[in-house]
Structure formats: structure tokens, C-alpha cells
Image (cartoon, rainbow, N blue to C red; front, side, top):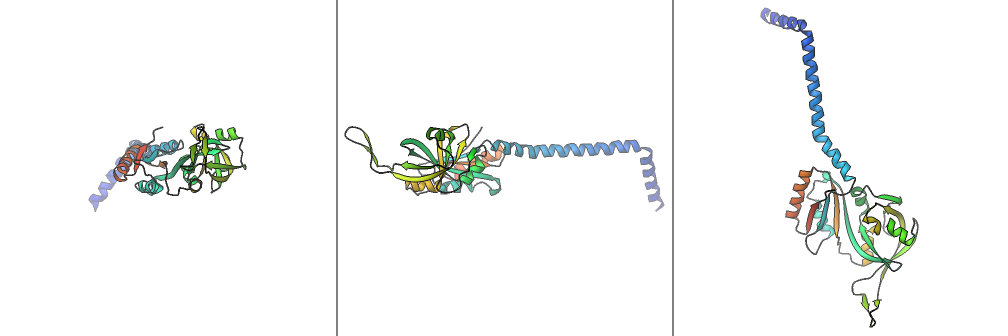
Length: 250
């Protein structure tokens, strides 16, 4: 017991005589721990924050058809390869040539909620597309037809086989599909989206009378590092035959 007591008294006396050195040592340890904590935060958090900022500029993964048939079911199969926690949003698109006031326009059917997540940079004057019967109009289209929020318009679609030429070579349309829409908003992106009109997938299927769930492309916003994203894209291309996945590098 005496030996132990003497040992602690020696240690205590040594520390008391060298208080300044002890304080410097403790401060060094604290500073080192703080720097290490900061480096760990930078290593893990900064790439995620940068990824989140870059996703504000649009999708970082694109699904297209690897063969002639490409449906929303194929999109869902490929999307399932990603972990649910990593998927920010999925926006399928189907494009069709339609007419407004006899002028050809490209209409895009999509999932409005998905587009909100994959394209947060879209600027809307008016209301966002939310329901069937509503139309989101690109700024260039709105200027061409002088459209504004609240206007009612009819969109025409010519089914395959309904268009021909008469004996004089004039274009003849024997049948049109027609659907009425309410303009709910004007889309401003500074890009090609301003040349399109947007409706729900259900509306474009009703207009074209083609309900097979076909899509042309799907845009995805995924929260993964570049290496993880590339590995998962390769996995999709190897395991989902109907889909070709590719990275978007902006």
C-alpha cells in the first residue's frame, strides 16, 4: 500500500512541476482531434453536398431503350437496382408530334412529381402541372400562340395511318384525336424545354389512344458518389436487357 501511495505522490508531484508542459500536451491533443474531425467531415460531407448542388442542374442518370420496346415497367425494373434511399427522383418522358392551331408541336408526357425532383431548375410562371387535363407550356410555344395561364386550348394528334396525300399531292388527314387542356403554367428553362408542351403520361396515352405504357427516356436524380454511380449503371446495363443506362456529365 505504501509503495502504491508513493508512486501516485511521485506522479502527482511530477505533473505539478510540469504543468505548462501538460497543458501544452493537452491542447495539442485537442487541436489534433479537432483537425481530424474536420478532415473526416470534409471527406464524407463535402462530396455529398457537392452532389446535391450539382443535382440542382438536372438528372445525373438517363435510361433509354436498348431495343425497340421500352416501357414504364422497364424503367421501374432498372430503378429497382438502386437503393431506395439513394433515389431522389425519377421522371419518365414520352414524346409525340401533335398540333395546336394546325401548327406542329412536340408534346411530352411525364410524371409531374418526378420532374419536380429531377429538374428543380425549371422556372414556372403560374402553377405546376399536377393533374390530367392540365398543360404546362414552354415559353417559346406560349409566345408563338400568345398563351397564358388559364387559357383553354385543343391539342390534335394524328394516329398512324390517318394521314395520306390526295391525287394532287396535298396532305389529307382522315381522322384526328382531339383533347382539350387548360394551360396552368409557362415553363422557362433557357433550353429546349421551352419548345415543348407537357402533360401527364395518362393524358398523352389518352390523346394517342396508345396505353401500352411506352416511354422514350427516363431521367433520374441519384444520390451516390461518381464511382458508386458508375458501378450501378454498369450493373443495370448487365442485368436489365431492355434498358440502356448512361451517366449525365454536366
